[in-house]
Length: 55
Length: 402
Ligand SMILES: [Zn+2]
Image (cartoon, rainbow over all chains, first blue to last red):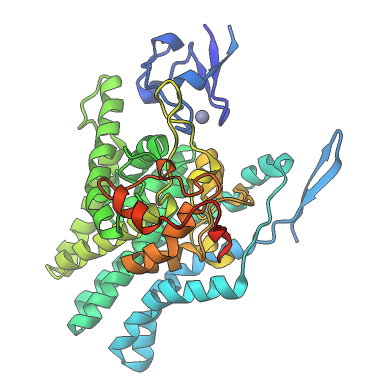
């Protein structure tokens, strides 16, 4: 499971944890997130901007 | 004085003293401004003094902006984590939230239990709305933060004026689409505040509900599920305002409708002035560039920024929405308003004056330099505006006129 970082605010999307508040269950891989996924914390950065930080 | 300090491996000791630290305490005194008209009435028996808080807000704050001047002080980046972690700053906006509920109840009680003329009723109702609108601004500060406590307090503050969708609409809708023609909460050149409000207010209700509906559906829940945060705030409104009607009678119905609307109007005023005419450019792939510092209008006046938890440092807010008010920074050479937000709210209500103050200032911004392709223009107005402002271009340094 990989982790992806929002370069704007430091939010991390951890595939193992998902983002249940946003409706993405634990284990949801990053590439499976909708194309219009935006950072749940800052909403400034979108899916394209996220950086892979940990395989 | 309280000092923040840290040891930096290269720069040595870094210290910062927040000159506004104790000034933020005045946020706890605003209920007294809202209630000052009632206090003066008890002292003088004169119902016209209910106008005092309205004048104090729209004109008094602008006078204070002029007298106290600007604050361009920024905390060093190295000390921002300490500043963000300081519980003192954290609790101040939270503590103002119960006061918004209390003040609404006081106004409701006062109106229902005194023999008042129609002008008095109008002034009191608008004052209640003005103060609830300030509550929407506080909810804005709190609603961007991650802890559950802040987010709950935001929902309570919004419930006072029945604007429970705001935080969802603002964070998910406005921040994503800011300064684009697609954002109903970003105003366009040539659009006056009344035209703007007619679209912005209903579109805000719809977009907030829609964003929350999508979130609930992704969780596999119905939009009516109790964890719907918009619904939670609306439910609180129903409880608070329903109780006021039950206790104080039907006079509450017009009072609440107008006070709610005037609360929303405060937020609409802020939205109107924050991004007027500013436009993000399209990238090669068709999407918009990220919101840049020059896509917001700023002001650095001490008085109005204290009232608004530094909302006027708006460029930094859009770049870093989760940053707390005490760490928002001021930058040179950004789009800057000639006076603080409250004065601009008043000017916005007079469209001819607004265009006079703003249009040339907008066109003279360095990144626009008279190029209408870089302006967010009201549909159908471009040719007319281009003709009117044909003389304003990069050659005329009108940006410096104020
Ligand atoms: Zn982010």
